[in-house]
Picture 1 (cartoon, rainbow, N blue to C red):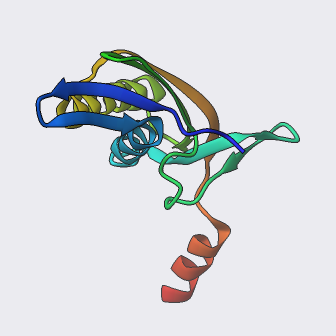
Picture 2: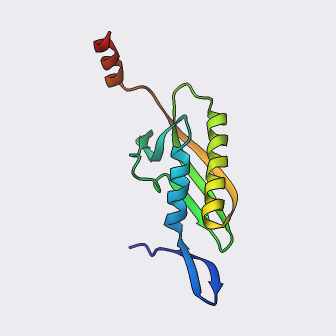
Length: 133
């Protein structure tokens, strides 16, 4: 069983504020899924093929290293076919940095984007288009 690591954020006369690493991961995952062109988060490579995670697993596909004042993020994503990958990755980096810094007060020193795969339109969507016409 993994022990959940907390980040000491503030000590005051009222007490201590702690933010769990998982919270930082969830913020990063949510910020990433807001970006147009990202199909989903990647759970890693399974048999050489990127495994796409459901949109409800916001902290999956995100690895964080958090200190008392700084954070570094590794994001594993699957992009939609046809997008310009450098533009999508840059938008994700900027959105994640802004979201984490705004919500936690941590300084984000780096956001590394790892593109693990490309998502193609589902065959089911193509069938629906044929049925409509």
